[in-house]
Length: 316
Image: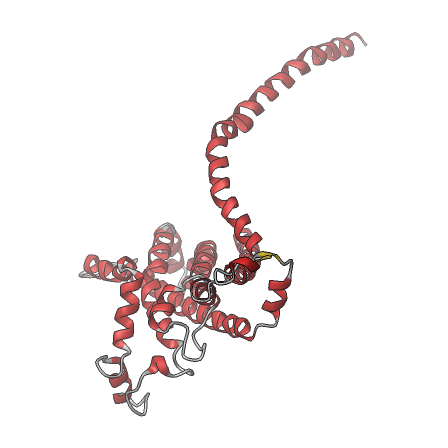
């Protein structure tokens, strides 16, 4: 009984000290850093949130520069017009087509180039510089160059395609509603491949060589090595790069606007170009903000789904 009494007394005398120590550590390592970071966090939050809130508020207003006296709050009227807007749904379909094929080819070609650059061969440094060159070219210049390449009079591509039998004759591909979208997609593939090549090459170089050596000793085929070692290690990076690039491409109006202007007959009109033309051609900032909010919600849903999938892949 006396021993238990002594132990209980020791516990009573130690616990308050432990509590104070834990509280001090909590304040030091959990609260104090955020206290020092709070000015930067507040500034960044204000820079991000204030324009976002203002932009969303515009979608509930009628803001047409050509009708300055008709401005004001109109509630969900813009969203009702958006639901009935045929151009919006055409732009939505074009956005999915444009984003899917751009991402698919950019990723596959970027992965292939990353795996090639992860090996040793003569002239690797020069080849690596050439691979990364498109990423350094201004978007406007890229769009003008590719528009010239597709020109049926002075551009070589229509003549080459006709010589290969793909086209019946060299004509303006960017003026054909059925084929026009492939012009900006081709330019976007050329422009975006270096992004995947750079990021995936960095991820490939972080994979331990011992794993490949062990697989070679075990007699694994190149395909088994790729599927069992390379892809699982690349999966988290692939998820992040695909998510970022998808968001950028869906918002990437420059190439399409310079090459086709959204035509012919809205066949290359995507949501980001529709936002631009509505705001700066029709000068209807309220309706343009409504389209932008719709695009924002679509991309948010996509990002949440992809991050959830990435979490599952990391657990594996």
